[in-house]
Every structure is written in structure tokens, then in C-alpha cells.
Image 1 (cartoon, rainbow, N blue to C red):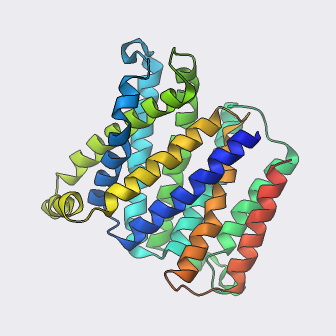
Image 2: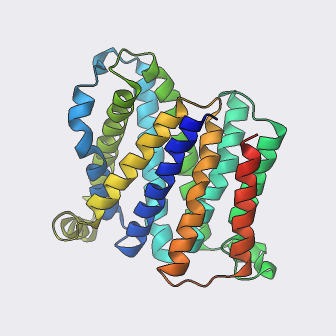
Length: 298
């Protein structure tokens, strides 16, 4: 991983933790995420149009990947909405970010996507995942299957599957876009993000319109509560930085691991802003995460 990729991801993690915090504090619903998706794409329309990319010239494979990414994004949003409604940020956020570390690595290894990570990097990924699992516990003795058998854990797994899916699919899509004429890598990323955000907006809108309660929530989120717009902007910029970082790594799993730097930020936000308890398990979990990240750098 290059220093450029590291700096891109470092900036993105603050924004990622920020929009998750806004989401948890506001109204974690599909209506909220519909507004958020729209806000994530709207600021970049001009740049997408002037990117120099001919959408009609994109191969059919790209559009298949696009549809798959939207599918995984919807899964991710559904998991996030219900996960935050049922659980605390200090549990949903770290676990929802931990499991994809292993999932993405397994998928990339099975399908041969990119360079095989070193033994040290793989070990670091495992340590990061274990640290994220330990972090939300109250006491070490809470580690049992019963602790994780709940509706919250179900939606955390939904979040993880969605994250894994769109991370892998988007990395392949970006490789296709990289072969297309464009003004710059930034324009390619903005074109892709705009396309994805409006595709996600349409998909979520079709779901939200199916239920009266969700339609009422959408009116509130769109015209009375503007937190969704701020969260959407943060989310889009964060993912633009991640997409740019993908151009500077040999394996997308490296990106997925370093994005876990947002976990300490999320935990500290929970402790100091949401007044959640600071436990020994959280401290140990954070130490393991940092250790895993350092190992992954070699």
C-alpha cells in the first residue's frame, strides 16, 4: 500500500465514522438512507457529466456489476437501518466493519482477485477481526454463542455481507472504468459514485414507496430533517476517497483492512459523545485493531 492510498483512506475513515454517527443519532430508516443516497450523488452530477466517460461505450459486464453493486448496497442499508434501531453504535458499527475484513479476503483469494496477501498481512487481518469482536463486549466472559445469537447480530451479518459484496464488485468495476478514456482518476471516481448513488436512490425509493409509514418518514427526512443530506455528503466523499485508494493497492483487501481505522473513532464517539461505558474489552479491542493494522502494512 502506498502513502497516497493510506492518506486517502485515513481521511475517509473520519467521514465514514461521522455519517454513521449522524445516522445513529437521527432516524436510522430506509427513508433516511434514501435521502442520504440522493445527497451523496447530487453534488457530483456536473463532474460526472464532464468526466469524458461515454456511458454507452461501457461493456455489458460493467452494467451487470453495477446492478450487483446496487443489490449489495440495498442489503447493506437494510442491515444498517435495522441494526442501528435494535443495537448500540458501539456494537453494530465495529462488528459490521470487522467481519468484512475476513469475508473480502476470502472472496479475493477464492476468485484470484489481486495479489495474495502476505502471511503477516493475513495474520494482521485476523487480529483486526478478533479485536473488533472483542471490542463491544462488556466483559471477556461474555464471549459465548448466546451473546451473538440475536436479531442485532443477524442484521450485523446482513451489513457485513452487503459490505463485502459491493467492495469486491466495485473494485472490479473500477478496473473496467480505468480502461475507459476520462479526464482523470478523480473524474472516473466521481462518475462512478454519482451513478451508484442515484441507482441506490432509485432502488431504495421503490422500496420505501411500498409502505405508507415509510412514505411519511421520507417526507420528514426530505423536507424537515436535513441530517440525511449531511450524512450523504460525508458518505459520498468517504467512498470517493476509497475508490481513489483502490488505484494504489495490489489487493482490495488491504483497503478493507485499513478502513477499520474508523473503528477507534466510532468507539470514542460512543464513549465521549453518546456516554457509552469505557470497558477493558474496548481498550483491548482497540489495541488489537491497531496492532493488526501495523502488521498489515508489512
